[in-house]
Image (cartoon, rainbow, N blue to C red; front, side):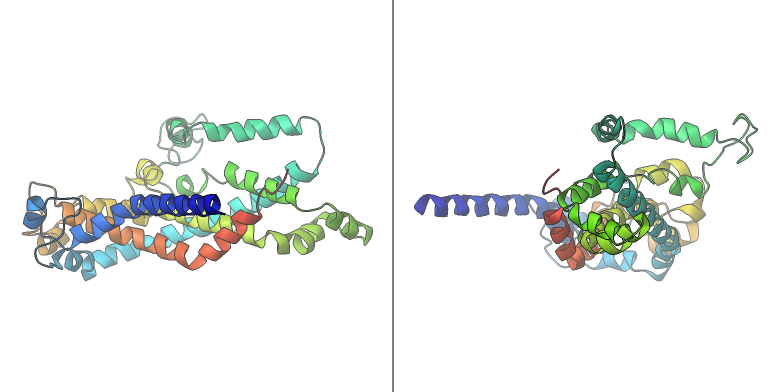
Length: 309
C-alpha cells in the first residue's frame, strides 16, 4: 500500500512539473505583455514581472484598425477549418473502415506504407508541393505543360488541396473500428442494411467521440497553421489566414496609414518584444479556449481509440 501511495505521489509530482513546463511560456508572455519595451529590457529573472502595469500593448492589439485587419482574415481561416474538418473526417471514416474491416491483397502493405509517411517531417514535402502547385497546368497563366505562369500559387486552392488526407486520423479511426466487435455489423447485414446504412446507423454513434478528436485537432491545427500559407499565398493579401496576418502585425508590417497612427512611438529599431508576445498571447487564446471547452470529448475519444487491433 505504501509503495502504491509513493508511486502515485511521484506520478502526480511528475505531472505537476510537466504542467509547469508547458504553462511557463504562456505565463512569460502574459507578464511580458504588461511591460513597456523599456521595462522589459530592464527586467531580469525567470519571469518579466512589470514594475508597473502597462496596457499599451493591448491598446495596440485591440485598436479598431488592427481588429479590422484580423477580422478580414477570419473568413479564410474558418473556411479552411470547415473544409479540412469535413474532408479529414470523411476520408478517415471511410479509409479507417477499409483498413480495419475489408480484406484484400496488399492491405497491410498499403497501410504500413501510408503509416510510414508520418515518419517524414512535413517540411520535407513543402518544396515539392510548392513546385507541383506552381506548375499546375492551365491555371495561373501556365500552359498545358505547367510553364509560363504561377499556377495555383497565391490562389485559394493552394490553401485547400494539400492535406485533405490526414494519415494520423486514418490510423486513429482504423484502431477504433478494430476495437468495435464485428458482431454489430454482421447483425445489421442480416437485417439487410447496406454499407452506407451500417456506417451511418451502426458505427457513427460509436465513433462520435473519436470524430470529435479529429475535429478538435483539425481546427486547432488550421488555426495555428502558418508556414504553408506564408509560402503559397504571401503574395495575395486577400488570402492571408489569421496566422499570417498576426505574424505581419507582430513584425510591424501594417499599411503606412495604420502604422503611422498606431505604431508611432511604439516600434523602434529594437524589436518590441512585449508587443510581439502580446500578439502571440492573443493568438493562442482561441485555440486554448476551444480545447478547454471540448476537452471532455477529446479525452473520451482518445480513451476509446486503439483498445485493440
